[in-house]
Each structure stands twice: as C-alpha cells, then as structure tokens.
Length: 108
Image (tube, rainbow, N blue to C red; front, side, top):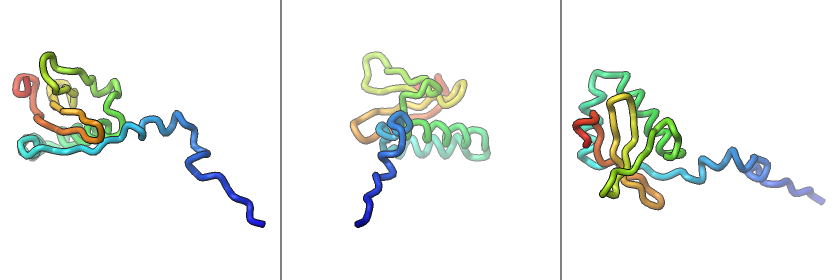
C-alpha cells in the first residue's frame, strides 16, 4: 500500500502565501510604456526603481513602501516609485493597469 503525502502547498504556512493571493497581472498602457522608456533611457537608477515597484505591485500592491493612495474624485490610485516619481494605476479584480508615470508635477 502506498502512503499518500500531503500536497507541498499544505505544508507551507498560510501567512507565507498571503501576498501571493493578491497577485495581479500588470497591464501597461501605450502612453505609460512610452513614458517608462523615456525615464529609463540612459538611467539605470530609474530602471531599477521602476522594476522594484512593478514587482511590489504585482505581488502585493498594498505594501507600505509603495505609499498607495486613492486620488480624490477619480478611480485612479497613486504609487510612489521614488522620491519624486509617481505611477498612476487603475486596480481591477485581476489586473492592475499602469496609466501614467512621471514626476509629481507631470502626473498630477
């Protein structure tokens, strides 16, 4: 008789899986893609900051490091990528749309 093993997922603590329950697909708009390319062209620091923000958004967009807040009177949310670099997003059930990225003055 073969002994059945519990699934590998059953052995993982539930609190370790909680960020992955919120994982959403990132959808980049054409305008945002152009803005990202402009920001990272010749600037490796911006590239690293944007990549880190995207990883955080995808795994758990409510992380305090992102300083996520809803914009008043709109359906958009704002995320801080760096000191003066903001990302406007639209959050849906399974997707996060990246709408606009730029400095504080450019985005608002």
